[in-house]
Image (cartoon, rainbow, N blue to C red; front, side, top):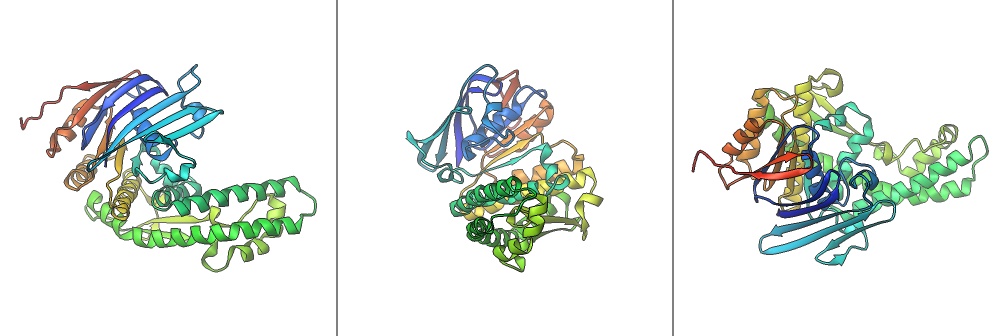
Length: 374
């Protein structure tokens, strides 16, 4: 699968931009703040129906404009698909596939799989468990529309339950209504738990393989999934924690509190890992995510790599590039601030002619690229 063309209208700092891409490797070069990451986010938006970075669409539309539009042409074998995104923040949001509007976003997610790697991904390690659950949900939602449906339903009911707990602060709780919420949470929670547990078990081997390739096998890494549902059903758990929930005015247990534990050499990664080790760990997670999606979908996702050389020593950079360029990673989009470095990357890619774009102040212009092999 590849993205052959994209058209951005009033998307972040792009007023009107049309680009045609290489089916294999594309490089964006420019100083920070020029719009390289915005191009990657536009591609991500086409695939997932939302931004990777912005929490709401109002932060995506260009300044002083009231809408944005994205058009992408995806090709797979002999088939072409056109995705159109039309958004008026706080008013309307439409996604169309080949002229037909989606009734539900859940029907789009996973159709065009994507994996993105950004410098801030180290938040997976530094921040709270929400970031690690986001990684699980991002992967599984692209594989299983039922999972995404259960996740949306669980979060909707959870919000209602938490609103009730807060509303009744300091007063007795309506036990019957709480019991209804608990039962509504039970089915989705069980499905989410089982899919997460199965995923992590099968994800460990490709993750360890990717980490070994990046680090040369010098460090041992591991993952472990923890959930309240490992020992009891959700209704039992919620019944036991009801008094605590009443005092804290929120639902303190459930799959929204699940954890993914990272270890390096048998010790917690967050405490002992250097910057390079943390970056390598996260890169391995994302590249393994790519491999997992590729194997499950029998389709190569789009790989977005934003400034991946940040905080990596030269040896790890060399091992990472060797791993990516030697394997079948389909279509890759790579950004960097160093033109010579990105040209060096393109030079190693000999399968097809790559494309290189200079990005400056919301404008991307293709740079003539001549390989030394020509």
